[in-house]
Image (cartoon, rainbow, N blue to C red):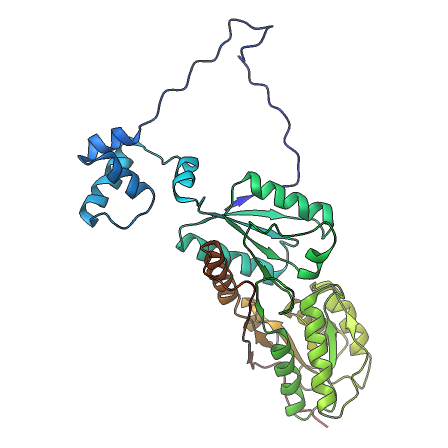
Length: 363
């Protein structure tokens, strides 16, 4: 996977360059690599057959294809990417634009995208951005065009694309992850509302009379929808939601909020918007003498691999990042091939994983 940074490339002058100040330093020509004709002679087939194999066409017998591939390996032949693209209309490459490389969800989704793309025979060029500014996003599109990609997956909220100078070019197929279903773009995402409802309903079902919420950043689509679903679930149960305390997805922010909640004797059930903030809150509860789950039950969101090793093991909402990544690739390839509806929305379900951090209230 190719990762593109933010730095601007500067001209590089090579030693021995043929310049007016160094007339005798002309660099020797690079030796010609093996050609299609060379491979054809080596494999005992026509140049057209080598071209078919090189372009991934299926109208070649398996035994012939194997002979051609072996000849390519022996000679060190590498198909010319630009030439193949001119013939097929495809560069077999997709771009990914995302803001954060630190969050668990984004990294798991990116891993799934790269895996699914490789299985489909595509490479991935990643452009991470420092923030959602219009200039950065527009610049990312420009760099992806230079990289000759067939389409792009965008991992941030679609409302940012609606700003005046941020538009997805019509000739560049795109899929958006982490956005509202009615964003106007093809969207794939976890069912955030379902997960929050499952978490809140689980705690209420145990007999807790209220559920406090450690929310994610107020700028996050996922955090907003988890909070709204938590609030709606309490409302449906006839419960007035307590004040939300927002963190930044980090363990430290969960710890700081957890210290405030631990000092409140009315807090007996907590739904944290992700597992990392839940972990921080659990530490704070332990330090201030609030036993889990005897005094306080807590539910997270994500189902980190490490959640089973929290003490006690964390009850949480499982997100299927692999499916989100796979479906985003499938939808993008359909759009590239002109086989997808103009804009559609796909949500991937969640499920509750019950462990030892939740129990019925002791009183």
